[in-house]
Amino acid sequence: MAEPQRKTYKQQASEYYNKQYESWMPWIEDQYLKWFTKDNKTSYATKQQLDKTKVTGVDQVDNLQDGINNLVGGQLGKGGLAQPAGDIASKEGVNRAERNGKGE
Image 1 (cartoon, rainbow, N blue to C red):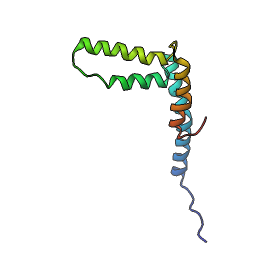
Image 2: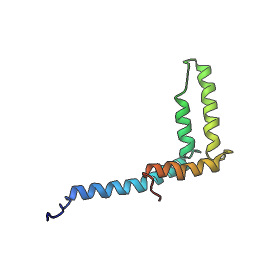
Image 3: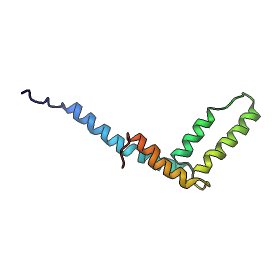
Image 4: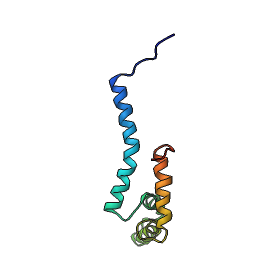
């Protein structure tokens, strides 16, 4: 029988780094959003997606769309009416998806 191949130091280090990145990066992103914005990942992603829907190059219309996008996204963030739903979607949806379906 053939012996299983041993992993090189570089392969082991790469696997360890990827494992640590997968477990820590969602937490770091959550902390950044909590400390520096009023967003959670759900409200932040909602605002990003809505920003892509601008249909004109007219400043007044774009400003109106920005206001509506921030209002909608803000409802999912800190102090918004839908904050509990946004927090749950951020923790259980976005973070779990970033970890390929694994829990914390």
